[in-house]
Image (cartoon, rainbow, N blue to C red; front, top):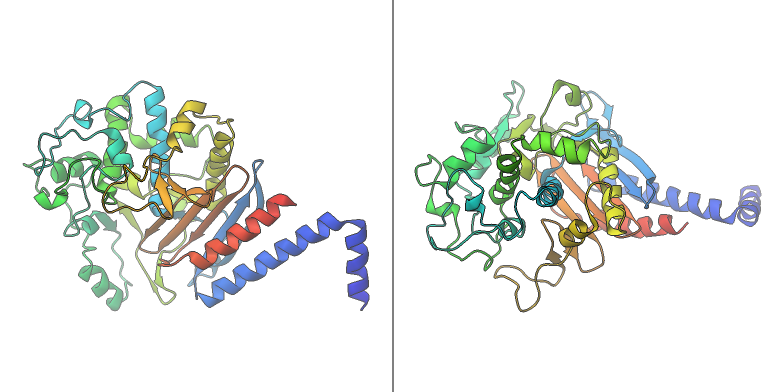
Length: 395
């Protein structure tokens, strides 16, 4: 009774503070409940408004064996959320007059890419950004682009799983340029007609990691800089994202989470040959700086892109009359790599071995979620974060 009287008095004297704290406590309760219900190793959440983080918290472990907690500063690779950085870099490249979204990629590349099923058709930059280029991820070889570190304590069962799914780490062409040439030109060791769809550019959608990496490579060719150097200069540096990197280094390994297959079995650390499509390593806090910039951009206040670039990047590309085969517009449309959801959010999801990530934002709230295990279904966690994100922003 004494507690209830005190709470009632506080609500009279400081109603906003008490309601906000109750919302925070309720969110934390539900996130803890989610951690245990899904039996996750760990995860981090950041919710922000148009000024910065208003909620940040880690749950569970980044490293179970060494009892290393997962915090908003924990670093991990973020899977396909990385493609949104390719989008921002592309828009900056367009501002620098390197090319346009309408440019034929063969006007840029030092080698020629031709779809064997429609050799006379032009593949444009924008076809890469909407996954409609006709370049696809050949399942027979794409998982070989993951380069796992050798591990003496790899669980034999997990080792068998990795081998069965093609995670053999046996590619010889291990730089971005050598892989793309080997995969996309007829004289390449990895070339196959199965690397392409029998469809004209723009006519059929197929999610393409290789196509996304190729978009990043276009920037390298025109800028004369490596893609990591370009993104450091035009994205990470200006946004003070000092804990974001495309490579696994000794520095970020100290704060890096362990990628788990299950809480009992961990994948070895790995890098990606086609790293721009999913290899960015960052923390929830660093990623919130990026998301804050996207919110500000949506409100016309970007530090790194012009208003016109932001407008183009987030503009829905397809209509009911132009939607390509293998895509429906019931839940989302496409911008420049970004997903434009029908509920008013913009964002992207990411998953890789031992990785699940989501970023979402609109003009007033942003959400970052990172966990060190693969989650097939994120419906519950995103419902929680959207619900409480909107509540917190209103306080």
